[in-house]
Image 1: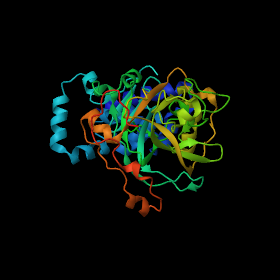
Image 2 (image 1 turned 60 degrees about the vertical axis):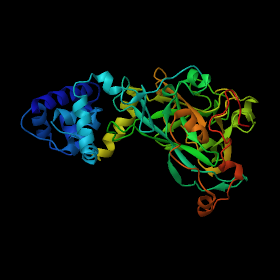
Image 3 (image 1 turned 120 degrees about the vertical axis):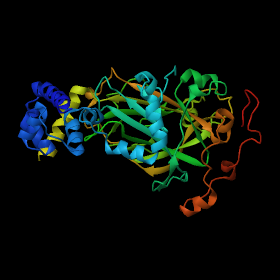
Image 4 (image 1 turned 180 degrees about the vertical axis):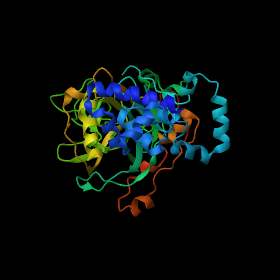
Length: 118
Length: 295
């Protein structure tokens, strides 16, 4: 798990760093409020857990989806946990039902709006 | 991609940037008097329910199906404003910027001119979010917004009919352009770094348009970025059809989820009540004859 998020973060950060030196390890670490050595450990996949708050801040820095980074860390956002806690039976059943559905079918639950001819 | 979820329109541009998501909702409110005065913005009465036109193919007018988009039920005793918020599915430390064009009956709510599909750089005919978090009505250069309030098409009362002399489109139209990814990375992300380190046919009874109601204060904020930052290759737009709330059940099979504001509620807000006709069903029958008008 650590290796997965580490590589993902490092690849994204280095891609940004090529265009903007503000995405150095040190700069990004400072902006999210952790030590550069700690972010280095995260990127190397060493056992260096990040809190949800830091993962969310890191996702914002890198312009990435926070839910993707949280999932790579083995976490579920506290906002989603709250959603599930409010209707645990119904949402538990829904999520289990959706487990085998293709992405397109899951997207269909959120309805797509058609633009016609005006 | 344009989605409808929980009565919110989600304008999503994943090909531009993961954070390029804008949520648009429609808020019910009281109508302020149309007496030339300027009033404080009245309180919200809840969000309008939104439905896909495509989900009701048997009862919606042909023109609605041609336009696509969504529909909402509105009483003549209420007005609406539009809320703009960052899309909720993605974290946004700094909201992604968007240019937003709004029209009623294809009359631009900022300029008062006819709808055009592109962004007009010479005369700013759009709003910029963040900065503009809501759109209260037809916006004037005098810092006043004339509330969006519903009127039946074909009676000459909608803004569209007043400007064009025709009741052709009705409803509302919204188009959204995201900021170009490179502009976002150049203009917005550096800021974040600094802050951190440091119609339809007029003959159809249910179809409505928007009139210019009473005044409330709202200014159009100048585009702080300039027209060149907007990604004109990636536009999403939506036609919002307005249905007389008394005919919502006929059209959708669902009871309107809200009741119209009552005179006592207007009184409690310090606002004068509207003519009685505003709160009464226009027809005794929930099922008007095909092609009839409820005028």
